[in-house]
Length: 223
Image (cartoon, rainbow, N blue to C red; front, side, top):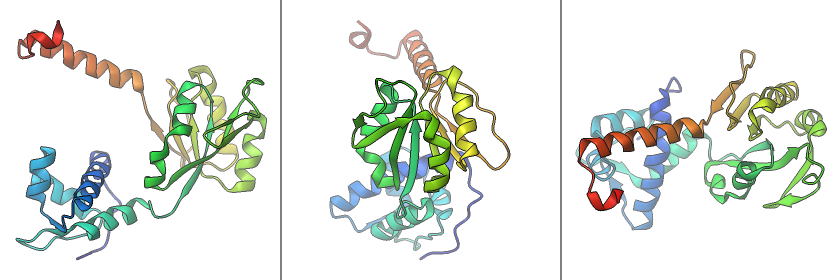
């Protein structure tokens, strides 16, 4: 049963919904047709009322004492994120991180496709990685305009990130996925999603340090 989707959605919910989606796809592959928030919560170690609230943002409502049709719930999440419509993107910075993103095949499940890459290294320009050609950086803005691409991925060193972002915005890009360790300044109406790998690693290391200090970690794990 579907209602009207609510797009004023908290970021933590946006991050949890793909996790539910992957879980539901696995359930469907095992032949399960109906699932409840209690079942999801038990398997994912999450609070069922929070799960119900998260799913309601997509517009779907479960049936009391029954739950959700798995296929219907999967489609509701896909429609909410627009994963049924492919969003094409340009990537700038074809180093190790850039190549890893180009080679990753899982993006297609989420309606995302890198169709061209750009770099200013003459030894890389003209080569193809994962079926994606590397073009000269000076062609970025004009190709954004010509091909009506609205998403840009930045995997450059930190000192180049702002200049690349400016070129993307000049070409009409309104959504930037930034992997560079730099803060990007953008005008109103341009969305930036920062992926700070160093920050994530720092959190992991600190939590590991605290776990070791607590004495709750098995000795053989840290030896």
